Length: 279
Image (tube, rainbow, N blue to C red):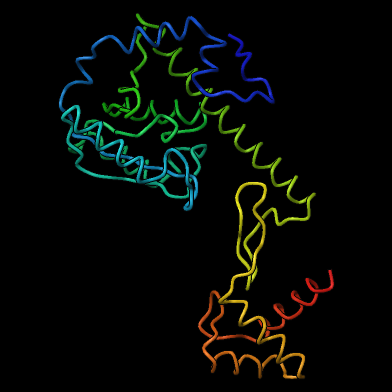
C-alpha cells in the first residue's frame, strides 16, 4: 500500500501522516485501542529500557522523560519494574544484537522478567527491519513489549491482520521521521557552512558553541580565552613553545584534555589564532 505522505520534502507528524494517507488505519487504531486487553492488564515483572541516540540528546524523549513515562505507566497498570537497561549514544537504526542495553533487556526475558517496557516504540527502534527483528526475538523468548504511549505491541495474529499492518506502518513512519530529521540536520549544516559558520565537529580551545539551531556558531569561552591571550602575548615576545608550556602550567592554566601543556598543543593554538585574526 503506497504511503503518499512519505514523499521527500514532506513535513508532517506521525499522526498527521497516518490520518492523511491511511484513514482506514486510523479507524483500526482507534478500535484496537478501545478494546480491553486482558493480557496487557495482567500484573507483570518488567525491565525498563531507555535509549537516546546521543549523550546530549534533548528532545521529547530524553532519559529523564523516558524514565518518568515508564514509571507512570508501570504504576498505573500495577507492573513491577525489576531492572533497568539503557543505551546512551546509540542510534535506533542499529541492530538489537549490537546494542548492549537492549540485548541485556532481552536476555532477562524468562529470568524473572516477562516484558520490556519502553516510553515509545521509537525508543525500541527507528528502522522497520530492526524493529521487527527485535520484536521477533522478544516474542520467541516468550516475552512482551509494552510502550508507555500505547500499551502492548501485540504479536502477529493470523486472525487479525490489522495488528501487523498497524505495527509495521507505525514502524515505517518512525523510520521516515528519522530520515527526515537526518536530512534537516544535513541541510542545516550545509546552510551554516555557506554562511561561514561552524557546521561540524567540536570547538577548538578557547571557543564554545553559542546560539541555537542554524544560528549556532563558535563563540569565545572566557576562561580558556585567558590562556589563549597569554599564549599569543608570550609568543609575540619571542618565547619558545616549550617555555610557554611551563609558564601556563605555573600560572594555573590547564589544557582541555590533558594534565599539562605540550609544545605541539601550544603551537596549534597559536597558529590557529593567527589564521583566525588574518581572516
